[in-house]
Length: 83
Image (cartoon, rainbow, N blue to C red; front, side, top):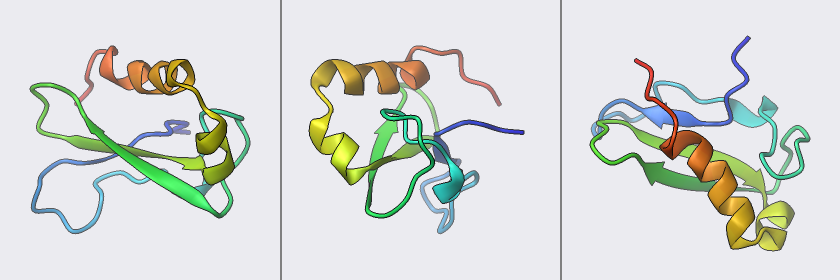
């Protein structure tokens, strides 16, 4: 079972994500299953052909401070990329 919160596009021309964890993923801030409303955040790793995204509850995003956001995004950016 894949428990990743991060979805991704392999190529900029893709219309649909190569992997999308959907709304069954956990919010990375409160660790509860996502429900609406959510915010989708996009990011890229330097040198990677993939573009990544993750979703958070809107209320969690509004309460998150820069340290909280950095913790979530660093778990992707600072990890080794897998094919």
